[in-house]
Image (cartoon, rainbow, N blue to C red; front, side, top):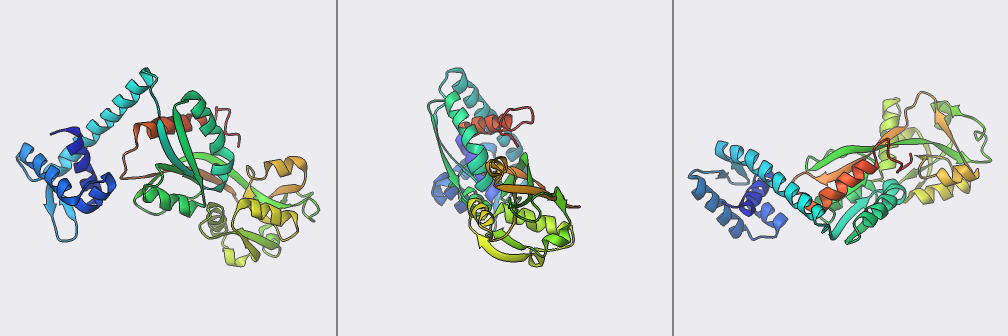
Length: 305
């Protein structure tokens, strides 16, 4: 028995498939089966029952999985500790962010991380929430930061930072001098929405649902593929929209756009650290996640929300 065999066993256990486990760790199905057979011979008992469409762990397999995860976690902690001790944290990390965190939060954190670890390179992909989650599932990205939760059971998410959204209008709009307006008034105004798959759109949808309304109740006049496009649309009189205060901070300071609350509507949302539940994070990814969480703590100077 060795740690590599335990790693393979955990993948089979988690994915309930020899072929899927092989794809995840780049081994052929026969090779995966051979390693599982070696483990069963080592322990003298069956660990996996081979069924027609999927494999199922035996009671012995369930017991082994518990200890195997602890051993693998300790292995990763050991690698991280020794690498940091020797100043040898290096490598390449692929991460992603939906529009708001990808443009307004992650670049500064990534820059600070690379200053702390100059031998590390990071690729930051930016897309809508649906795209980042899809790329995380396909293992194209090790982690993502997105603005909406997913119901996909293969994804693990934890709250990272809270965001505040508000109704955003042009400086010359009739509501520009108001602090808040009733929801019923909003439903009559020309409204710009983000495209399907956007975390902002999902947040608006959930907010309206909690208030007894839906996206269909809005007077939608246009749909935009990015937050910046929505901002430009608002500036040019195409309509108004609900956006993250982070995304429009410069325009609000300059006075070209104004923000206001909607009476009785909670427009707070969160950004979520998003990982594949069944993919073991690399030591470099674990170091970055700790740095990311520390950077996003309320007492940290950045990001400023």
